[in-house]
Image (cartoon, rainbow, N blue to C red; front, side):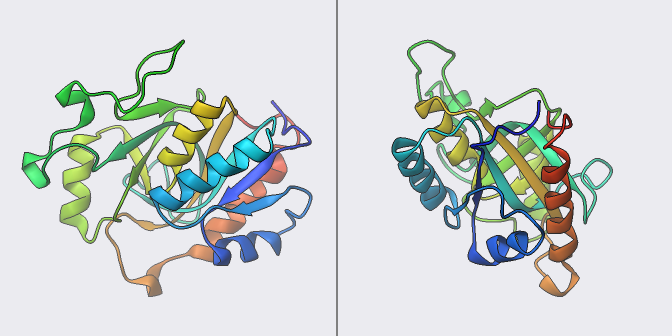
Length: 210
C-alpha cells in the first residue's frame, strides 16, 4: 500500500529528526516523541488523542542482532514488535509477562498483549528495551529470550501499544546504525542508516510499503 496523505512520522530524537528533514521528507509531519519507552509511549498517545492519522510510522536508527537480514547502513520494515525487561527479575532469572501469565493489556475485541504486538505482515521482528545492550554478552542473552529478533530499539513497542489502544495503524521503519552491543559511536553509521530510511519512505509513496 502507498503512504496515505496524512501519514505522521514519529522519531525519537532531535538529531534523527534534523537529519531526516535534510533528506527530503518535509512533505510529512515529523513528530519528536522522545528517547526511550516511557517518553515515546506517552508522547505517541497524546498525539493519537489530538489527531487520528490514517497511518503513523516510527522512524530512526536501531541496532542489529542479525547482520545477514538487517545489515549496518540498511533500513528495514518490522512487522512484530516485542519488548524485553518488563516482568520479574533480571538476567537468567528474568520472567516475562507471558511466562508469568500476566498480559500487559487485554483489548476488548482481540488477543491479550504479553510480550509482542504484530503491526503488519513484514517478516522481521524489532525488540524494544528500556536500556540498550551494553555489550555482545548482554545482546546474546536478549537474543536467546527473543530468537526471532533482528533489531533492537528503545521506543517501538510502547508506540505500538499506544497505537493499538488508540486504533491507529502503525508501521516501524528503522535504519541499522550498528550491531547490537557495540557502544563505540565512532564505528556507527548513523548517516547511512538514516539515508536508507529516507529512501524507503520515498519509495513507499508508490506501492512498496508492507
